[in-house]
Each structure stands twice: as C-alpha cells, then as structure tokens.
Image (cartoon, rainbow, N blue to C red; front, side, top):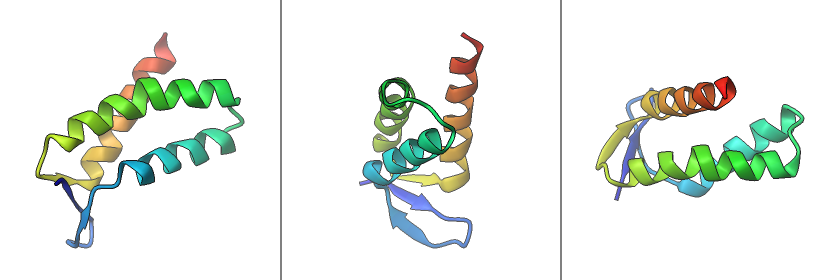
Length: 77
C-alpha cells in the first residue's frame, strides 16, 4: 500500500478516489465540460495513480508536481 507523506510529517494512505475528486472539482470550477473532465481523468489522473500505486511512500508535494507537469504537457497540445 502506498502512503503519502504530508507537509506536516503525518503519513496517510494514498486514496486514488480522493485524487480523482480533487481533479474533477478543480476542472469543474475552471468551467470544463464533462467530456473534457473525463479526458483529464483518463489521460492525466489514471497514469499518475498507476505510477503512485507502485511506490511505498510518496511526498504530497511530489504528487502535486507530477500532476502539474502532466497538465502542462496536455495544455501544450
């Protein structure tokens, strides 16, 4: 199981659902349509989640960094 190391130093179990909800909410707040949100989840969230599941411990800031990197790459297309 993957644990997330928070900035406070606490460890928390990684929740793919929590990550997906955060992306969905941010995309909705940004005014994206449902189709685009589903695309983001498939092309951005899913690969990140699969990568994180292979790790035992990951820093929360690392999750943010890799998500932003993938989003930037998509935005350039």
